[in-house]
Length: 116
Image (cartoon, rainbow, N blue to C red; front, side, top):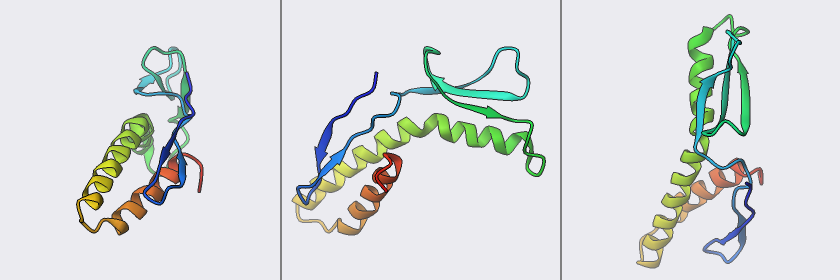
């Protein structure tokens, strides 16, 4: 199930929330495929990435597997960045200077959500 909600930035602009396949995502092997990893929903209903492990001769299976783990962690990482963003907003409302950090966090969120 995909969502399409909005949240407001400090400047009053709308920032679109994620419409990606909801997490958590897990990393698993594809049955019958020796050289392939799959990233998808925990219930196996949504395949987000099918990663071939036999093509990276320079760095080998270890790097490909590490990349797959990062892909699998993406929804959790994005959720944590959004929580951090809310903390920055709270700190800013309490008088702390967080504009640089908030700008960087917003850029990461926009990149993850395809707005950049």
